[in-house]
Image (cartoon, rainbow, N blue to C red; front, top):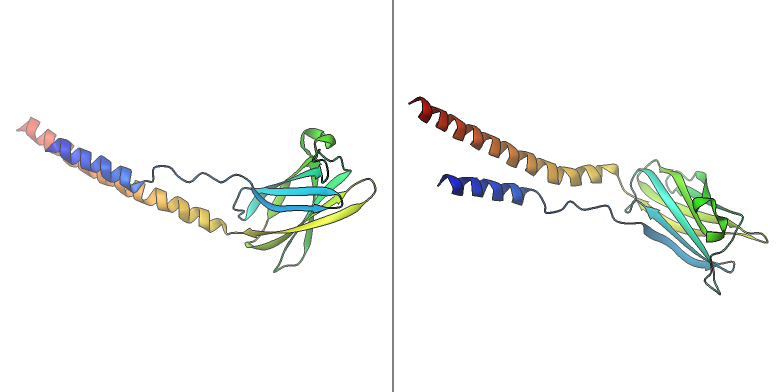
Length: 178
């Protein structure tokens, strides 16, 4: 009987916590367009984007051949729709190699939960152009609620197990004294 009781307690604990917490998704693509003879693919991580730091990676290839494009500079300009003020971020070439056509902006920071306009400005030798996209930035509270969905039932199940263990210990102690 007591083993059945412990088995049920462990099953309750397992049922209270999901088998695996949702891992953050990989980068999400928010721009995939051709412009100025280039194919521009921009991704953001974490995905979905939330208030706080983010990384935007821009991959540039030649539209005709698909080879990595060598450009002078890539800038990322973000603007919250409700605020309307532009913020400029430089995107450095990945591994300091302009020839690979991959640029990354690591210091990007979304300050509020809102729909954000994101423009990728490409400066090539003979031209300059922009490609626009949009990113919906969610609230940081959504992550807290997701964590609470896991932590609260797990804590309650642990407290139940602790109480059951204490009751078992007291019962064993009474038997030993008697």
